[in-house]
Amino acid sequence: MARKTGLGTRGLDELLTAQRKASESHRAEELRQVPVEQIQRGRYQPRVNIRAEELQELADSISAQGVIQPVVLRRVDGGGYELIAGERRWRAAQLAGLHEVPAVVREIPDQAAAAMSLIENIQREDLNPLEEAGALARLIEEFGLTHQQVADAVGRSRAAVSNLLRLRDLSDVPRALLEAGELEMGHARAMLGLAEADQAAVARKVVNNGLNVRQTERLIKDWGKSKPAPPQASTDVRQIETDLSERLGARVKLQTKSNGNGKLVIEYNSLDELDGILAHIK
Image 1 (cartoon, rainbow, N blue to C red):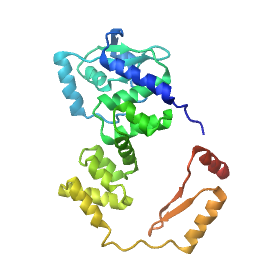
Image 2: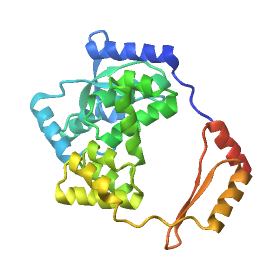
Image 3: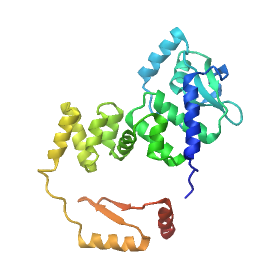
Image 4: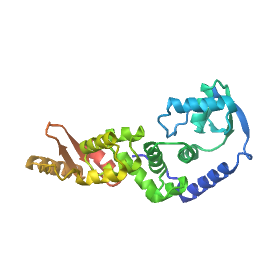
């Protein structure tokens, strides 16, 4: 399975140096006015949703004062530019009726451009925790960075990075409530040890009752005490797990529900092991 080559320690150091210089001043770079229609959305933009009210407020500010901070762009093949940072400003400027925006154009290779886009957005934009977690995960998965390297790149502790990444394991209901701002990160972290159905029930109860994080932790601590113990896997299920594990050379779990639905989970510890599993399946 192909994977992008990591930036490595030297590449990361160079990237961080470029980030520091860029944040100190734009004076050494050419500031220009770029037509908004020549700019395309960045491929590595981590922010999924921008509220219409938020864009309108920024558009009103731009109408009154103009775009104070330039957007950051890179050239793309065939002409035009790709956004590295400043999507809200670009979209709000169009909403305000501007035909051009001030921009700094940097000549940087694809990998550095992608990493810089993610890092600058994490540092500067008001991302929700799940968007930030997604951006951090892409730095790790697509550029081969460690948790510590990502923490250094975005100015966070390693523990903070790890906690954000764990939010990606949330089920749909708490994810949606977290994205909407109805749950805080502390609420969501407390729910990670629960089953999917329990996460949904607890999340709704927290929102409906306005529970704080400590109250949520107490609720979760008592949540399973009155519930019956889960049924043991049947002999047939265990045998199927054993047979599949032997065939695929990996640990296999069957998670069955009373209504007949379920999940087949295949675990692997490396990309090489995953390649071996896929070869057996093919």
